[in-house]
Length: 300
Ligand code: NDP
Image (cartoon, rainbow, N blue to C red; front, side):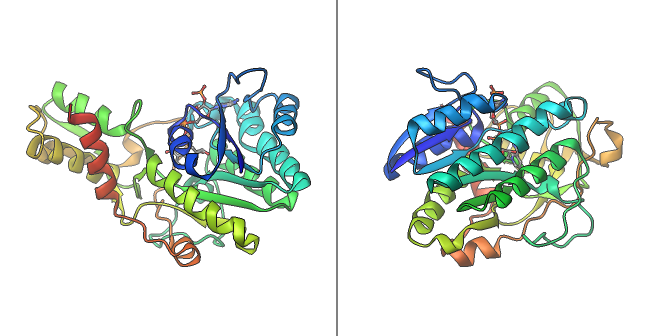
């Protein structure tokens, strides 16, 4: 199987190169492309040429305009990257018979209530990012080809910057931290997303009727405050990291305490039962994934 991965240098794109390797020959392109192939989602013509030149059986689009606050003032580019380009990829895939995998977000919902969102629940994005991601989903469905859209939440990876690293740095500099405690969701590892992608693709290759949208997040839920406390607890108890701020020194604050350009949903819980029952999967707890990521960044 020939596989094209876009967004190769992002959190999920990086992990996909590992998880998809056993399924076939992977060509992974970042924004700058490689060997005359374009990986820039702002350049649709170049992207189409790339897809036609490679003729992949599977296209996995992990590229996205993910700067949620910046997108508020950069809506045209966000729309291009999160909607126009994925729609074009979907039309190319539909024409050639390739399978398209794409990622979307809990930010397509308005965050009301406390019930985990199901795939068919009414959407209501609060931000430019959420609206462009929702439009991208719709463009992919409209193309009519075989696809998997995975909506996920609160993605982290050991590689690069992440929330846990920020909390560890702040806790080494300050005696107390203030972290939001009214947004609820599940921190989800890029490695888990990539592994589930590989599993689902293997199943879909045999049964294209399973094409559709699935919620993919680690099990359980927490707040950013609970996430921060968990990270500091493991760092100090298991890795004896000398921190000035203990988990007890992480004060709860409401979202309204931080002014951000984009509004974020309060309830980001995703119901993953459709994914689990369709593909025979059991998603691990968010704590197990975060503990593993901490081992990777703290065990030298
Ligand atoms: P990252 O921000 O880590 O990676 C996104 C990648 O897209 C980056 O490598 C970025 O490249 C690339 N990119 C941006 N613009 C372009 C462009 N014009 N052409 C080509 N590549 C571009 O995101 P994640 O890996 O975390 O996200 C993967 C998917 O999951 C996305 O669809 C995202 O919307 C979704 N998601 C992410 C969440 C999160 O918390 N991060 C939460 C929910 C869903 P560069 O490095 O050059 O900017």
